[in-house]
Length: 111
Length: 115
Image: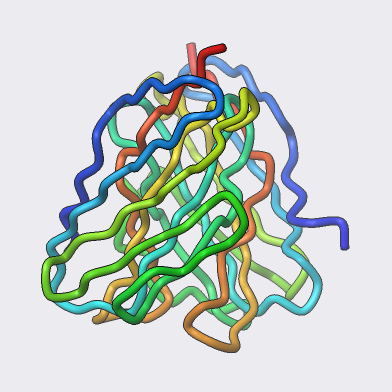
């Protein structure tokens, strides 16, 4: 099984940077995903990491360290529309097609 | 691409009644997943299918829950009889089979309230 930990809540100011950490303990590993979920809506895919290092996609970047069981999602130049829950999800090594999700981090962006 | 389509968006029912949730995956996606989301437990995988065949149903809470996928474009999740603790948002998601980095595409969910 998976044990995935994320902070529950974070607050930041418009234009600032926020880093959301995710730690995981797994019996196997085949990749880590980040999803964004606005209140009352479906989760939408943000990023995927399977190798160590940083993946950058516009204002969003995601980092992975497999040896430490650690990832973070970096949100730059925060906008009000970035207020949402951010979910870390790990692909189970014993079943490549199952994703286990963390509880999510609610980010509130203030003016 | 219409995305994953779920119906109904909202369902309110009384304890003991049968509830059927429906899902149409993205055309060409050969994996379909049913998840349940609550404040207490987050997103939990209930069951998933590959090419219409159930592969892993270990997340189905109990025998009151059943899921079917009669063809590549339709799946149902049935709860019979329903209980108040089943109240949650139920998401259906699909993915293409090629590549480990193929992400899940979620439908808009069905918000179920059992009174």
